[in-house]
Length: 94
Image (tube, rainbow, N blue to C red; front, side, top):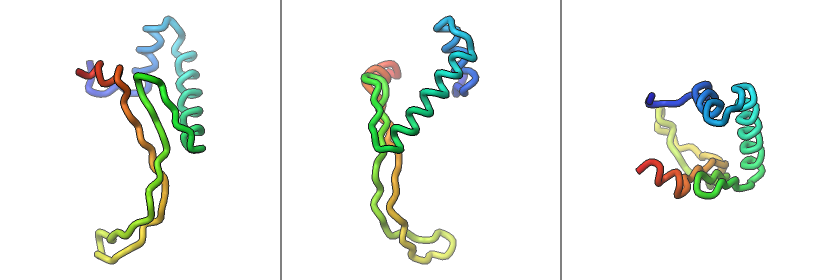
């Protein structure tokens, strides 16, 4: 198996495993990622028990330095995304 699995390969593998067409699987993945992005951006935690959890996190404003000039700058508060592996995913990696 390859070191990475890109979207095309993932769609082909899921289609083969499920017996669905690649077009159907691709549509489901598009809908999944769209729903995931809109839910997380609204602040809703998305959890698939045992597999994965995705949530928006808040980063406070902080002081930083411009790496090229060394000048002190203020970094504004913002949001990030936290992805956590569930127990089934962790067990599959062992």
